[in-house]
Every structure is written in C-alpha cells, then in structure tokens.
Length: 596
Ligand code: CA
Image (cartoon, rainbow, N blue to C red; front, side, top):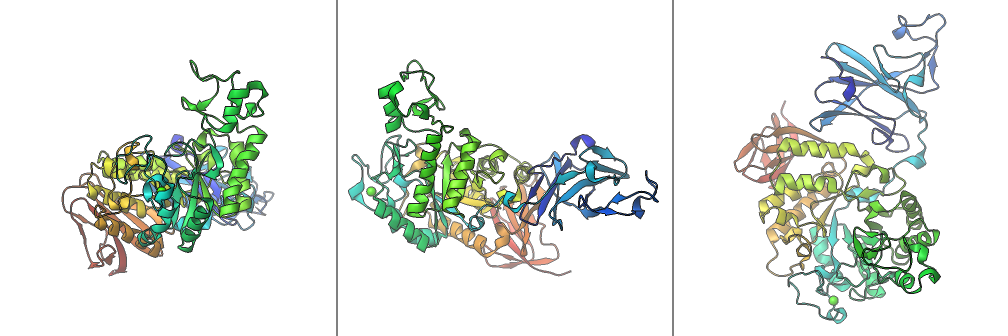
C-alpha cells in the first residue's frame, strides 16, 4: 500500500475548507477510495513558533539555532465515499481565529505529508508557508442562512390548484374543480382557499409554504409576470393576501414567494413600450436588444428565456433594472411580511445582481430565506453572499431512480447522497431545498407507476435526510400526475384523499420535529448497504442514535443494525431487538439501550 497522490485533493476554498461559524473551521480532504487508513490534520497558528521542537530534532536543522513552527495534530474522521473517492472531515476552533494546515496521510507502512506546496516524506516545520491557510475567520464571511429554515418542512402550493375559497374572484371560464389540467385552463384556487385549509396544513405539520407566483400575469402558472407589484386578482385582494399571511404566521407557517427576475412577459408594459416606441422608449436598455425595431421574425432580435420569444430577458446589469427589481424584493417583505424568496431561472442572472438582491432583502428582513432555482452544482451562488439555498434537484433524480423507478443499486444511491453532501458546505446542506417533485416535474407517484409503497419509501427518505424537505401539494394524499400540465391537478378535498398516506406523512413530519437527529442535528452514515438484497440502512447520530431502514426488495429482509441493542420502532411504537422489514417498506429505529 502507498499513498495514491493523484487522488489526494484539497484546495483552500469552499467546500474543502470554510468557516462554519465565527469560531469554527471545517476542513475536508478527498482521497482514493480504500487507499488511506488514517488522516491527521497538521495545524497551527501562523504566527506561533517554538524555540525548539524535539520531535523534529533529527531533521534538516541545527537544533541549537533553529526555530520551528508550532503544530498540533488532530485526527480527521472518515466520513463516507461516493464509490470512487473517500472523504475525510474535521472541525476545529483555532484559538486566534486563523490557521495554517496540511494533512498527514497513512497508507500501510507509508506516511506522507500533503501541503499547499505538494507532498513531503517528513512534516515540514521550518516555516508555515508550506501550508494551506485560513488567514482570518472574519464573522461576516460565515455562510449564514436563517436559523429557522433548518427546522422547516415546506409545502409547495400551485395557487390556482390548491383550494378555491372564493368563487367570486374566479376568472372567466374557470372550470369545475378536479377537471383535467391543460396549458391554459383555470380552476379558481385562491388565497381564501389557503385560509380555509390552514387547519389541514397544521394537521399535516408543515411549517412553510412555498407559493408559485401570485403576481399579475395572463397564464395559469403566472411565470409570465406583467406587474411585480400587483397580485393577480384571481387569487384575491391585497387585504386578503395580508390576512392569509397573518393566518399562516399565527399557525407557525412561514411564507415563501416565487419571482421571475430573469425575464418578463412580452406583454409587460415596459417591453411593449420598447416595441411601440423603439429608440424613444426609456426602457430600451432594460432588455438585451440586438437591433431596433423589435421583431420576432424570423427569430427574436432580443435575448429571451430559452427560445421563448414571449419571454424577453431583462438586462440585470442596468442600474435602473436593478433598482426596480430590488424594490420588488423589498416591497413584499416590508408591506406584507413575507419570509423569503424563491427565484425562478436564478442561475441565468448575473452574480452581481444576486449580491445586491441579498443585501436588499436581508436589510429589509435579516432572517429572510433566499432560494435559487439552480439545477446543477451551484457552489458559485452558495458562498454566503448570494443564496441561502438552491432547489436540490441534484439528488431529486437519485431519490427517484432508486425508490420510484428502481433502476439503481443501494450502493449507487448512497454514493450519490454522500457526493451531494460533500459538494456543499455543511451550512448549505442544512438548509438546502430537498424535493422529490415539483410543478416542473412529473409527480413522484407518477414516476413510481402509481405504487404507493414506493412513494412511502421516498417520503421516508426525504423526511429523515438533512436539509429542508419540500412536499409538493397533494403528494401526501396520493395525488398523481405526469409531466406539465398534468402535474398541476386540483387538490382533492373529498374521499379520494388517501388518508393512510396522509397519516404516514404526518407521522414522519412529527418524528422529524421531535427527534432532531433525523433532521439537521445528526451525522449521516450508511452502515449497512446490501446490493444483492436491495436494502440499506442510514444511521443518524446526534442526540440519540437512529437507524432508518429501507427495504427496496420484494422479500422480507432482516437488518443487522441492532446487534446487542434494544430499539424502538418509531413508526409502530414497538420495542424490538431485531429489525425485520416486509417487502418494499421502511422504518425508523431509535436505539434505546446497548446490552453489552
Ligand atoms: Ca376563486
């Protein structure tokens, strides 16, 4: 065995090293899977020197004259693999809020020191300049998402389809509740409907609502905004909106609104003005025009979202546009006390705009939550100066491929989860918006071919994982639907609701609240993964030890997780000494006592 240097990787930047809080630095290292048995962090204060260092007397320097940089060794913890790489982790609190560090790697008989200047056989101690550096732990640089988000379970509402509480505001042509959703039809859902159903939301136990857009727009989805300062009258008045927010807040439920700042509708008055007046329009620099007059033929002579001629892209580098959109961000917080923003097509807008947006929003409400719609690795937005979170579609498909589609092996799935956790800082992982379906994807139940056992396993996995889980309205009562527009069916309020599924979901949400190790106060590991049996167990360890067991096979399976211990099955309430799960089922076992 020897250290495989090519796979040893660290850079002095997130997510390899970051400030977790004002006192704590997290450091991670990746190595080839199975190659390294032990990693120790070599670290010290950059300004602290020893007169002599007996440990290194035999190396390089005349001990009578030498001064050595003072270092400490701290064990790093093995914290998982993605199947190719192993990940190592350590949390330290440098006493003077600054640190220089490197790594001591042990593979068999071989020991190497990995520093910013490369590999060494002996630990370099003549100068800290060899080492990686966190020059200073300035508190303002800490990734600082709102504390409440870690404890929130979200519920996504598509406003036209959740509940119709006031037929008098129904737009012309509103169809009968429960009809077939099409691209353009409306069903009359509104703010009063949400107020009427607050008891239902409370019973379910969700503590945040993410509303798809509610601003004036011609479509049923409202992503084609006409006026960011006006609510669409089909949802209700400003007074009704305020009443709804008050009612939700009184019931411990936060409110997240959705905004599209990337583009507007072609019918937005500012774009229309450019179309009509061309060069004379004060808004001509609000868009990315290639020439004038504006034309859509043969292709638009202005930049658009995707290839949608009807969605002209805003020029978010124009100071007037910036002022306008930032005032939107502030308006709904200052006037209506909303708790945050979900931002559509966020990844196509420049970073400078998002930095300004964060400052504006957090000035208006310091604990507002900002979630960007990014579908890919989003490190650039998640450094603490732009978003608090992204919609974590990176693992959505992993969840679905394993539980719903049943195409992947347990080891592939847990490797995906581990890779996702190591893609971002811990602070990001605690508030990332985890979902298994949304208004933009087929419903989870649809991906599972209507099989509710698979949906239950998905919900169990989502609600016992770190991050801030999001349920798409209706998933909890078995609402089905394929790709858009079918994924936007009306919420059933009659006997077609699957109440067993509702109770199961409610139970999981309650357990997540009661046992915080199942949310964001517990380490995650996968002590039992068996590809042949198609099962795995996830261990959550914090204030208590828990095994969340998943049987994704058609056979009964025994899980060897409780050897020598007694456990409590949190779903059945029964005490157990062994864990046996029937086909396609899962449960949560809390370790009660060890017998050894
Ligand atoms: Ca209505």
